[in-house]
Amino acid sequence: MAINIKTAEEIALMRQAGRIVASALALLKTRIKPGVTTGELDAIAYEYCIKASATPSFKGYNGFPASLCASINDEVVHGIPSGKRKLREGDIISLDFGVIYQGLQGDAAITVGVGRISDLAARLIKTTEEALYKGIAQARSGRRLGDISWAIQSYAEAQGFSVVRQYVGHGIGRSMHEEPQIPNFGPPGRGPVLQPGMVLALEPMINVGTFRTRVKEDRWTVVTEDGSLSAHFEHTVAVTNGEPEILTRE
Ligand code: MG
Image (cartoon, helix red, strand yellow):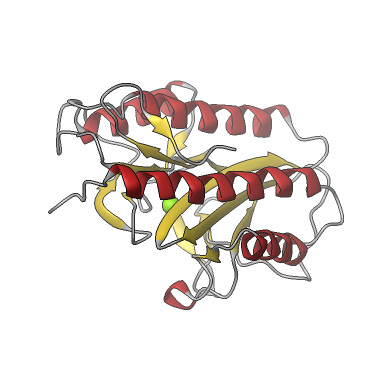
């Protein structure tokens, strides 16, 4: 298992790719309200990406039909946008978006409430974002991959939530999915030693109920097995000689 080490030039391009992803997600966040369809959100993401001279990386990936993954409530990841799917007051929606800019990738996700949401949903969203930042804090030269996994799992479970096992984070660079796989669970002190120039997409998927998931009949949409809510946050992060650098930032 070889983990690609990126050059400074590659990381500079990934920073630009990341900025496009972050700006698109920030724009989408302002459009989230009851009555909006996930198909409309997908169109906004696509147009933003094209205007920024980037290519949407999800579109056509293993046949995925859209630029954006839009996953509502019990949908964990890989929800397919549709002009028929309207957001409703109280929903939570996870938006996952990736682009390729001059051959290099950026990938990030956020979960957003639609109008007024329950205290439980708000706590799930907050915990998932915080779990991501706990993971990012471990993305330092000399730490091990398992330190990231454990930081995410231990934080999320301490808040009473569960961590999806079947889908994991990943290395990223010229390909969207590179080595290593980055589970959001598992013991610390194991796995590859992190080095400057590694770029990792960290993406905890956290559920209110069981960690178990299943794939719907559309063969893409992943839902929680028990129908409980799920949230997802992701950043593309570079390991440096010092602080971790979040590349998917505006
Ligand atoms: Mg990803």
